[in-house]
Structures are given as C-alpha cells and as structure tokens.
Amino acid sequence: AAPGVAEIAAERLQQLNPSLHIAGTYAGTPSVDEEDAIIERVRTAHADVLCVAYGAPAQELWIHRNLSRLPVAVAMGVGGAYDFLSGRQKRAPLLMQRLSLEWLYRLYREPWRWRRMLALPRFVLTMLVKGRVPQ
Image 1: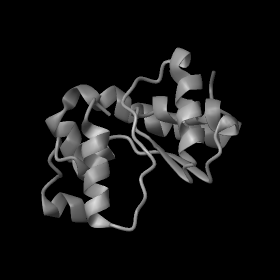
Image 2 (image 1 turned 90 degrees about the horizontal axis):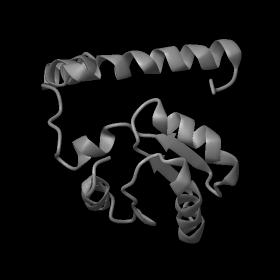
Image 3 (image 1 turned 120 degrees about the vertical axis):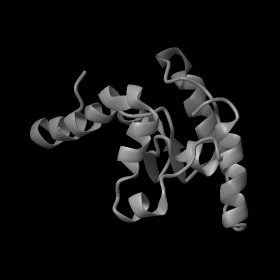
Image 4 (image 1 turned 180 degrees about the vertical axis):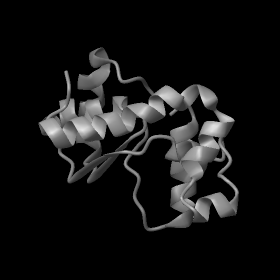
C-alpha cells in the first residue's frame, strides 16, 4: 500500500471493531534488503496475523519467502483492500459487488492493471500444478 494508506485502514478497522488490537503498520516495498528489519518489527509486535499489501503476486512471494521466519499464526496477502478501507479507492457500484464483479470495475477504472490481474490466476495454477512457488 502507498504511504499512509495502511495507517488510515488500521484506524478504520479499529473503528469497525474496537476490541481489535493492531500491533503496527509498515509502509514499504517488498525489497529483499528490508526483509530482516520488517521481520524483526513483526516479531517485536508479537502479531498473530500479518496482512501484506504489496499487490499480487509480490505479496504472496514475500510471504512464501519469509513465512518460516515469521512468528504469526496467519499471514495473508490483502492486495488493494487497504486502498478501499482507507477511502483511497471507491468500491464498485452495489450491483457489481453483489455479482462479484468488483475486479471488473477496478479493471475498468485502472486498465493498466490487466497484466497484474492475469498474474494471479497464473500464479495459483502454478501452485496447484507444481506445488511450489516459481523462483
């Protein structure tokens, strides 16, 4: 997520669920040079759940590379979810939401994402067929 987006999304999640404890946020890039520092921050925070918002497939690759070093019960890629939670991006019209076509609305609004949107099904297929992450 872009700088500031994770913090705003965290505030929104806290408003939606006041009993939720958010251990911290980090705005950065999936740079291998930064991984040790990020992992140390996660360890220090004693997080149970880690949400990674680098976008597909970078977030999935980052999680796969680092999961064994992370003391979390769950690590998940959340893609652009923080953009929507923070209000940075508008959600699709209600009809498109109900028809599970929000991805199509996002593609219409951001046509440059078509390659990234094709990467996720390809990544999932590779995982299902080969059982491992491509290097």
